[in-house]
Image 1 (cartoon, rainbow, N blue to C red):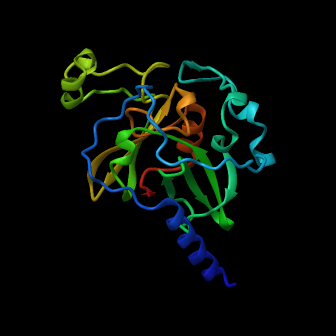
Image 2: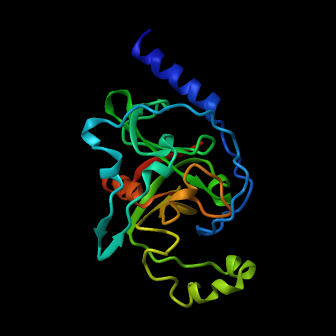
Length: 237
């Protein structure tokens, strides 16, 4: 089979597995409330490939780290499903190298690499994470972002008013729902309100939770942040 045919086969297979999530609901700003909902799609258990030697062991990947004055705790990798730990895999998307692909059905985020490979990360998804799909770009990125709660969310959760835009939002920190990094997604020059961000709630990775966009383990979102520039293309299925 030719390389072109292989790519087309990979794309068709990925579309069949992933599908497209209908953009049927308006997005709320990302937050991180750990009330759990049933998983959208059961994932068949399967042992993942071992991490590439260049990546080091999982304990090293997810060790405690000091960053921008904050001390991130180590992730207990023995308590995380290995499917959702960072690893290099064969690219199932057929997208161009340098593209971010979010597969909301399988709870994976891929960064497509040259040579038919992709860096795969596990993600957690809230309702906002299912409310938008399509092609866009990472307009900008922020280290240790401030979380500013919009009025619509405050109307539902008045206790969050102290973190409103008018009040300056929640300061960056270990308990901030946006975690250590945030990637802000724009489409046709407009903010989609869709975010890829870190989360202190590592146990929600691979799950569907009550709210938020696309959340990653803090150490993973830091790795992704360093690998992608502004204007990186992103596809959400």
